[in-house]
Image: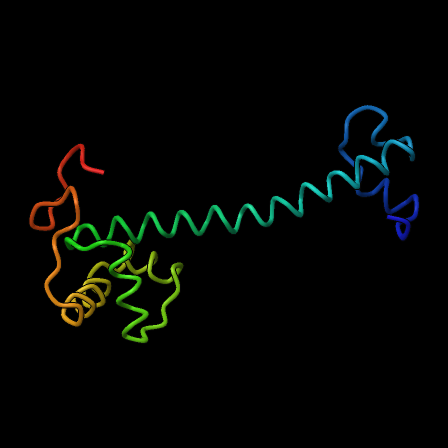
Length: 128
C-alpha cells in the first residue's frame, strides 16, 4: 500500500469508526484490511450466484421429471452452449422455452428414471 498518499487513504477511510478515519497509522491498516475483504467478497459473490443459478435450474428441471446433472451433461453432449445464468433465467421466466431444451436432452439420452421425489413430473410437498 506504499502507493497511496494520505489524502487517498483518508478518502477510502471515510465512514470508519473512531481513530480509523482520521489517524493515518490506523487508517492505513484499516483501509488495507477493508480492501482485502472487498476482494474476497467479490469472489464469494460469484460463488453465491452460481449456486443460486443451479438451484433455479434444478427446480425447473424437476418440474419436467429430469435431473440437473442429466440436463447439464446432455446439453454438453449436444453442444448446446448455454451457461447456467441463461438456463436459470429460462427456467424461471420462460418455462415454455426451457421445456424444449429438456425434451431435446431427454430424446437424445433415451429413457431415464424420473427424478427422485417426483411422480410423473409433479413435485409433491415434502420432496427435496
